[in-house]
Structures are given as C-alpha cells and as structure tokens.
Length: 329
Image 1 (cartoon, rainbow, N blue to C red):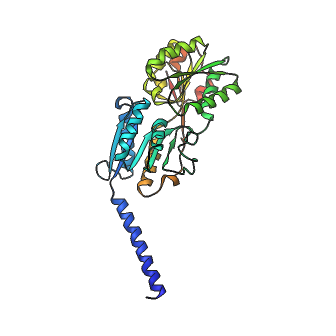
Image 2 (tube, one colour; image 1 turned 90 degrees about the vertical axis):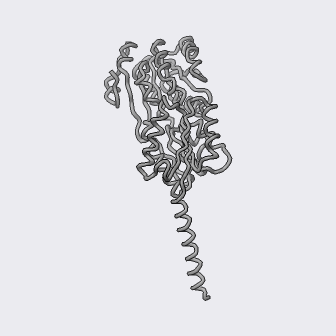
Image 3 (spheres, rainbow, N blue to C red; image 1 turned 120 degrees about the vertical axis):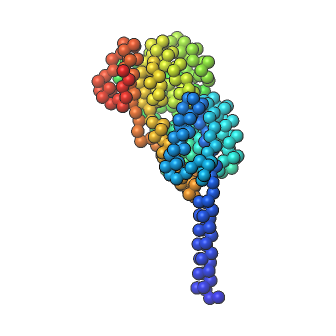
C-alpha cells in the first residue's frame, strides 16, 4: 500500500468513526434531571411544563428521545441540596434553577453537563470562569450579572421617597448571592445618601421578627433580595410590608401582584427558559458547556402597584409610571 492509499484508508476510518459517534449521539435517550426550588403549587409545575414545551419546540419529547426527571425541592437549602444529589446519578444532563442548586451541582464529583437558570453573579460565586467562556461543566442563564440592577432599585425607591435615608434589605440566609447583592446595594446607597440595614431570615417563621427589627432600626423602605424563599412567602412579605407601612422594591415581579409591595424591577423568569432549552439542545448535539456562553436577561420589567401607593399615601412620579410595564390599580 502506497502512502496515498494509506492516508485515504486512515481518513475514511476517521470519518466513519465520527459519523458513528454522531449517530450514537442522536440515538441516545438523554435523561435530564430538572431541579426546581419551588413546590408544584408555587410555580414549580408551571416552569417544569414551560421547559418541557421549549424542549418540544426543538424536537424533544419526554418519554421518546428524552426523559425528564423533575424534582420540586421547595425553597429550603437542605431540600434543594437533597434533590440535586439524589437525581444527579440518574441524569446525563442536569438543569438547576437558582444559585443554591447550581452550587450543589458544581461541587458534585464527575462531569455531568449542567445548565443553570436564574442565577445572579455566576462568575463571582464560582460557577463559571467568565460569561463568554464558562470553562467547565456548567453554562446557563444569569438572572443578574451586574451591580447596576440593584442600584436601580435603590434609585427607584429614592424617586418615590425623596427624603429616604434608611432602607431595610430582607436577605435569605444560605443564598450564595446575598453578599454580592448587598455590596451592590451598599455602593448604590452610598452614592444616594442612603444607609442599608440588612435583615436576615432562614424561613417564613422569621418574618415577623424581621419586620419588627426593621421598624426598631428606623427603616423607611424595604428591598427584598431575589430568592426562592422570598418567592415562596411573597404574600406574607407583602402583608407585613404593608402593615409596617414600608414602601418596597424587589427583584421578583410576582411579589407586586401579591399586593402590599409597591414596585418591582425584575428579569422575566419565563424568558430565560427558551435560551436554556437551546443550550440543552447544543449539549445533546455534542457541544461542551465550556464552549457555550452564559446568557444574560434581555428584558427587565417594571411593576408598580398603585393600590399600595395609595394605602401608603405615596405619589408615584409620572416619569416612573411612564416607564412601567405593568401598573396594578
């Protein structure tokens, strides 16, 4: 066999192997572990179904060419950790919602590819090396990857309450984002002449004590840190904020519609599911998460509850109302 024939044989063998691997990849039924920090009643079913639909749009059907292993963990960190650890050995790919589940997945042994959804500061908390080049087994959709959004929330409260001096910050203990969120708030507050008063909670049982502490320390307004726990107890936080007569701003839009809370500036969680499904599709088709950039929200929505404003005897500036995506009467 001459040199040219030898090269042709080797080239043909390589091509055959590549096509064989691609065919094997296409024929594989991927088991996708999907861990949500919600109960089925508190948004879990809605978002699980939305992910299933977005995957269906890309040609994937549960029980045919994928198997979805969905776990509703609820907002407590220990339950989230338990759900991720239990489903990971069964999964070829993990989907994790929120920073707690994402960090648990990051620290698991092995290299199961993982897509996270709605995680603030994924670089700072150590999930990825950078947004363009994740550099490991994880990629996903960031909820907030810059300090400007929390600064904007402080600014919005200052526009509504011009004499504002002291803002309570309701923070969920155990959420890896809270230090970075707090630093962002403190920087913005300093520039606006406002003092930040961190108030920590571990569960809904801590809320009444937390609000009593806010009033004792002279809080004049409230910012609620984005978290699964805050979302799970939205109505209770709203009621207590209204009872304490604290105008509030937060990062979860549904908390405005719960009543009591005044204004929200939030990325749209449902909008994050479509690009996350596209990332899952890329991984199934052979791409490594390390080569799939982390994406950021393209849309933040401003919600204003005028009913709450009236109850608190506050006037919303017309310029702010004009920017609102949803005004609740």
